[in-house]
Length: 181
Image (cartoon, rainbow, N blue to C red; front, side, top):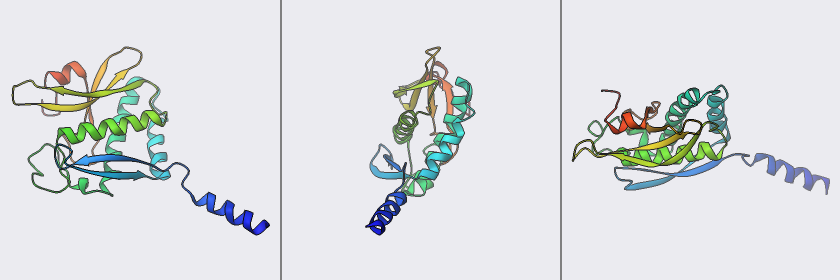
């Protein structure tokens, strides 16, 4: 009997305490989808980023880095590791991502951070679209500072897979802010 209890406890100890999974999409317009599992070690790495985030600005910095980590983790399980910044450098490659894919995945990553209790200063909002020119539609994830109600665009489309996301005040992003401008 005692042996059965010890064996049962051993099996329970081997089950990941905090493995989580989410759906990610890629291949432009979320044409392909996959489930991605995040291990307890990966979740700990994300938690570590937010330990010293004692201000909204520091939390946004941690968010930018966390999005890069999420992309690295997802890239080990999907072809998204091939994604390059923008839409030109990876056109036709399995795993490429446009702004629709990036904004959808980033919103999912942010929602997971919120669910894990890591966002103390920000609330996750729905995706946002800008169209500064008639044919220049672009999407990003969006967060709001809980204290000031200031909204921010969280945009990972500009960079290769795994790079920290760009975060801009929403009004600047709506006017076309980007790392190149």
